[in-house]
Amino acid sequence: MIDFSKLIIIVTLLGGLGIFLIGLIIMTKGLQSLAGDTLRNAMLLFTKSSYSGALSGVIMTTLLQSSSATTVAAVGFVGAGIISFSQSLGIIFGANIGSTFTGWIVAIFGFKFDLGTIVLPFIFLGAILKLFAKENLASIGFAIAGFGLIFVGIDTMQEAVKGFENILTPNILPSDSFSGRLILISIGILITMITQASSAGIAMTLTLLYGGAVNFEQAAALVIGMDVGTTITAAMATIGGNINAKRTGFSHVIYNCLSAIFAFLFITPFITILEYLKPGFILENSQISLVAFHSSFNIISVLLILPFTNIFALFIKNIIKDKSNNDINNFNEEFLKEPKIALNITLQTIIKEYVIILKHIETLLNEKSDYKRMDMKEVQDILNITHEFIDKIHIKQKNSPDWAYLVDLIHSIDHLQRLHERCEEEEERIICAKNILELENILKQFYTNISNSILAYETNKWNNIIKNSEKLTIDIEKMNQKYREDIANKIATGELDVPDGSDRLEAIRWLHRVSIHIYRINYYIHKAILSSGK
Image (cartoon, rainbow, N blue to C red; front, side, top):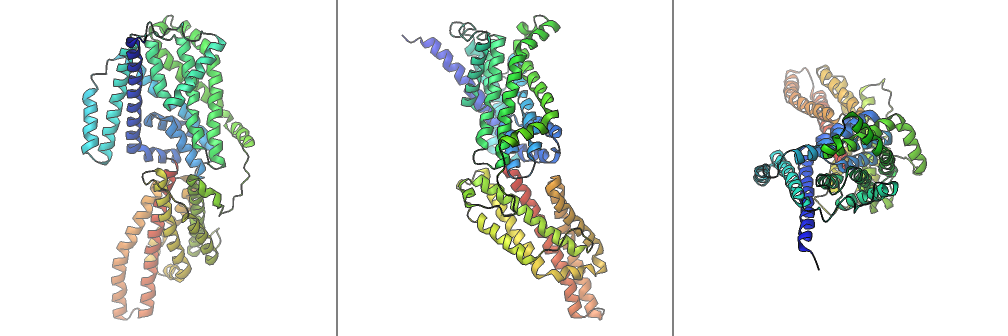
């Protein structure tokens, strides 16, 4: 006969877990909408080495409350060729540390304070903001409502676990032995695979520990398994990805498994050290002890592997070898089967083509340039191939990041084609501009903008470059209005003849048109880069 009282307790526990999970999802979506692009941009800007990458990974995961979002962003950026494989490793390592922050919130506020009722007005406030506010305020409302639901979920699980004395006890679960811990780790992996969020599993483990359904050693083994389970999302993100995306995702799996081995061996030493420092602390503060264990083995694991990042990267490269070629137009009809690959290849190609044209313009501005002038007909052939390929990429879901990614690339290639036309058909305009004294200062700004745009791909300082590019277009437009009047007056007084005056006007028009295209290309390439990491 079914014992409905026990069934109700189990259902309540699962319902509380569900509320927690929904709250976490809502909060993460709100935070991503509010600051996702800003954090992705910061990640690109500050990731210069494995150490800075690790710090970026910690910060982004802590603020977004999603190690999966951080890892997927790293996989996307590597796949798009924006950061190197070695740089992405630091991000992945750091994401593991950032993912422990949720456990601290749950352990400190969820169990030390009774927030289940207190947060209800905040959930209402968040819902009102989401329904009636716009843009950032709506995202803040979503985040607030999600944050509140997290504690409602914890409170629900706490109530349910009070009746678990006869349903689940430490004696029912595998014993604290070598094989027992391995079984519990496997259970932890399974829980994370189902929930797709290690934070939810850790919250449930903390609740069970709080109710005495599991002991500390069993809880620690479960948490280790949940850390390993987070690699499933990263592994799935690499399906159909290019070589670097596959390497990044596979590295996440390998690293977490190595970290899990260390954590498995670290359980007993951790307990011994903590008991030595403060006897009885684990028994009195089991939830804090568990999240301290979770943070400790992740921090130590990262500190141990960071000095060997290059060796680790070489190991992964030897396992997953690159058999592709690196030609500028590395297009293949097979890529179209996986839109993400097609988009990444197109982005890489557009950036290369853009840099080629920028370098060509720099040679027109500076005869002593280190770059070489290009045959514009050959460049047009390359652009045509890219255009033909992007025409074959089709995204059906308009609300997906890949849709925005594709639209940004279409805008980029359109402005790139028009920039090419300015260089191919109106090259004499810039030669004329160089001989006009009144344009000397604006030409210096124009040259600086070209040089900085060339470096953008290496420095990832897109925000400054976009801002400066936009300012340049505004400055040239303002100057154009005054300059036209001056030229007209000089023609009227006979200082200039009409052909010479027309050439001068065409020269500043050329600068204005080209500056607009450069600004828009910088803007849309940057948007496409951020979309590649979503």
